[in-house]
Amino acid sequence: MNSAMFHNVMVKPNSRVNAQKIARVFGGVPFGSAEIPNPLRATSVGGIFTSLLDLFIFAGFIACGIFIVYGGIMMLTSFGSDDKLRKAKGILTWAVIGFLILLFAKAIEITIRRFIGA
Image 1 (cartoon, rainbow, N blue to C red):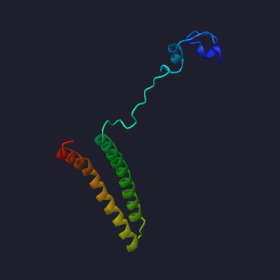
Image 2: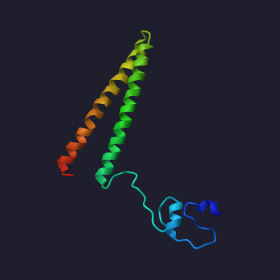
Image 3: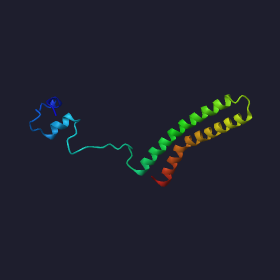
Image 4: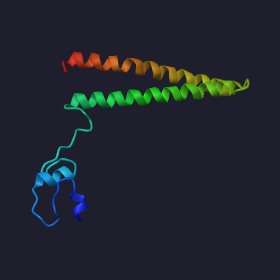
């Protein structure tokens, strides 16, 4: 290590340094201790369940939007073909049903939590 690395703490490379001064150079955490943040931001199983449900609801809304656009494009490009039109209507119908289920999913989760007392 060269002396340029320690210019903030004014330490010569061969002198004795304490852990506090070195820690300031390397981000402020003293050696021997570190804190790892919880990436889930949940402290219980119910919190993990809520986080996962919110993630699935978000992904479901994106998927529903994509399928509604896809079904609409198929309907516009069917050019009178009954088979393509029937397929497009099916896609739109199931996308709207999925959208409605997602709208009520959070309400269902809250109702279940209140019912079981969590």
